[in-house]
Structure formats: structure tokens, C-alpha cells
Amino acid sequence: MGFQDRDYYRESDPYSYSVPRKQPRSIIYYLIMINVIVWILDILSGGKVSEYCALQVWCVGKPLEWYRFLTYGFCHSLHSITHLLFNMLGLYFLGRYVEERYGKREFLFFYLFSIVLSGIYWAGAGYLELLLQQDKLDQMGFVQKYLSTVVGASGAVTAVTILFALNFPRVTLFLWGILPVPAFALGIFIVVADMFGAAKGGTNIAHSVHLAGAAFAFLYFIFKFRFCAIFGHGRPRVRVAPERRAARNWDVDDYVDDSYGYAQASPSEEELRKEEEFRKLQAEVDELLKKISMHGMSSLTPVELAKLRDASQKYRTRR
Image 1 (cartoon, rainbow, N blue to C red):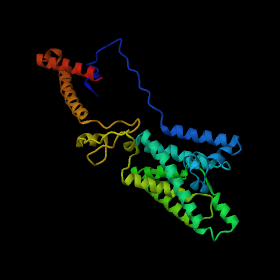
Image 2 (image 1 turned 120 degrees about the vertical axis):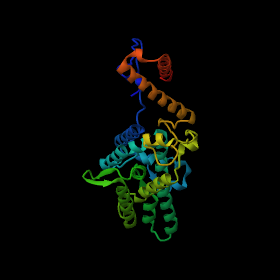
Image 3 (image 1 turned 30 degrees about the vertical axis):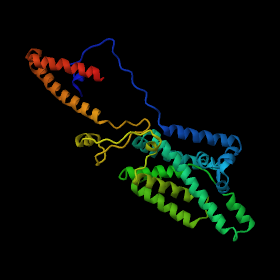
Image 4 (image 1 turned 90 degrees about the horizontal axis):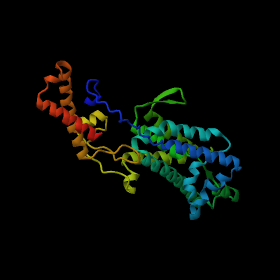
């Protein structure tokens, strides 16, 4: 609490008022909204949306169809709502913390690239397998592999889940809503389960998409890759004083991650210096206000009165 908030030092200004700033809505809400709207439109159109947006193996050889590497991630199975429901629940409960950690714009880039890269891996692996085995497949088997289809945000949601587990490994999550497990254990469980699923095969779950998303999240975290830095939306990292880093509970290194999207910007050296000066000024003023509270205004010397007025003016300027 600053000196301007003390009960015994509050200037009254009938014309002053504060307007709360409207915080931008989380990008998670928009992503969920788009997925739900696309699913509803797909139902109403009898599956026409998925027909034009789903990713199939044959798309690899047709550049005009490469838009499907992105659009498939916004379509979901029409046969069961659980496909959409589980993906959106995972995105909502875990994605918000990842978004807060990296910023809205960076999170959006990460999510969209997770969809694209997972789709490229799935379709590319399927297309390569088709080329290598085409002499061994009969006509029906060739057609089935050629027309293999994948839809859903599972690859991106898996990437978000793994990135959450890497950033917050000790946070307790509830598996299936009941079993408490640390986040890192959930991440390991997901990867191992998908590896067994991919090796076993015979299911309609695209385990390779999940594994591609998990691998991308791991590399993204390890190499501290940032899309916004590439596309020109980031700010240079700045050195932070140890006491300030401890107060904000930042990482143990001497730097703060870049600011992206609507995330709070990393302060510049000048901003840090000014904030430190203001903090010292507040400490001095608090001592003066305590003196006033105990002995009255008349106990202040002319120098102390001048310092109090100067501090008040500086606070107004800062605000």
C-alpha cells in the first residue's frame, strides 16, 4: 500500500475517478467458439464442412489442398460429441495457464503451428508408407490408405497439455476427474499411452498426431522457441534485479521472457530504475506519515514538508 492510500493522507478530488481497463478476452474462448460453431455447421450441412476441411493422405501431393493442414484441426467427429468435448475441456482448463505464461499472441501461434505440424507429420508419414507399400497392397487396401482421414484438435491440445506439464510439473491434476497426479506424470502417461496405441494400431485414434504435438511442445520448451520474436512482435529480454525477480516469482535465471500479445511487457532498464526510485521514495514518505500520525503535522521540518509535497506531485505524474 502506497502513501497515497493511507487513511491519514488522502486528498479529495470530486472530479477524479478511475475507469477500470477492459481486459482482452482470452484467446481460448475464441478457439473454443470456432470449434463449436464449425461442429454445429458440420452437423447442419450433413458433413459437408468436414468434407472440404478434413485432412487426408492424398492432400500431400496436391498443393491446392494444403489449407487442410490447418482446417482439419477445427473439425471434429460427428458420430460422438465426446471428441469435441474432451478436446475443448483440455484446451480450457490447461490452455489458460499456458496462454498466461506465454501471452495471447504467442499462444495462438503455438496452437496453430501445433495443428499444422501434427497434420504434416501424420499425412507425410501416411503418404510415405503408401509409396513404400504400394506394390504390396491390393486395390482396396491402397484406396483405404489413400483416403485415410483425420480431424480434430487433439494434436494441438496434446501439445498444450505437454507444454503445461513442462512449465508447471508439480501442479496436481485430476486424471479422469478423480485420480490426483502431478502434471509431469500426466504428460508421461499421455506420451506412453500414445506410443503403445501407435504401435498396436487398429483404432480410429490418430496417435501419431498426438505424438507429433507432444514432440513439438517438448522442442518448443527446450529450445525456448518464440514465434512472436520471428514475426516481430516480441521485445528484447532485459536483466532483472534479483530482489525484483524474487518478488515476482520469476525464473531463477537473470532474464525475463519476452512479452507477446497482451501479456505484460518486460520492463526496460529505465523503467526498472524509475520503479526502484519510486519504491525508495514511498519508504521515505511512509516514515514521514508515521511521524505525522504520532506527533502531528507540526512535527515536520520545512525540508520534510517539501519532500512530502514533492512526493505527492511525483505520484500524480506517475499515475
